[in-house]
Amino acid sequence: MAIEPAPPSDPGLDLVFPADHPALPGHFPGDPLVPGVLLLGHVAAALERERGPLRVTAIRQAKFLAPLRPCEPCTIRFADAGPGAARFECRSGGRVLASGTLAFAVDPDSHAHD
Image (cartoon, rainbow, N blue to C red; front, side, top):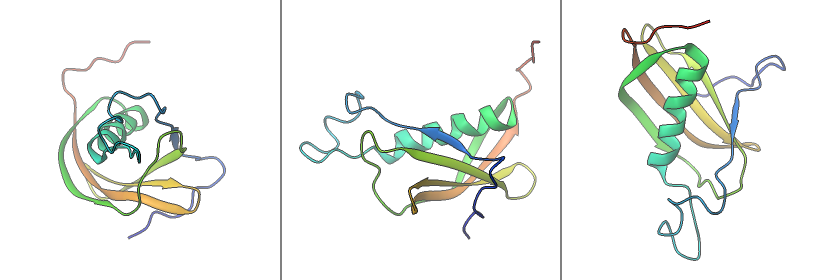
């Protein structure tokens, strides 16, 4: 299930992995790709930035549909998937790079500071 296009007021969260990122040289030499686990780590961090202190408890589903290359911009968007869950989609241009669902719990050890 695709996430609807973002309204202008909700552009999503953008990221770019630089060509000199330490995870890229071995993945793959001469044809570098951003590792899926690295992208998922940034998806989880983006979810926390968007929704506040939380802890990802499970990756319920993740599909990698197209490669993400170094220096290629990527936008992460979220949609509700029920209590304690969020669907995500990573896009570059018109391509969906990755999608899936994360389960999360509010982090009881976090304290908001003004």
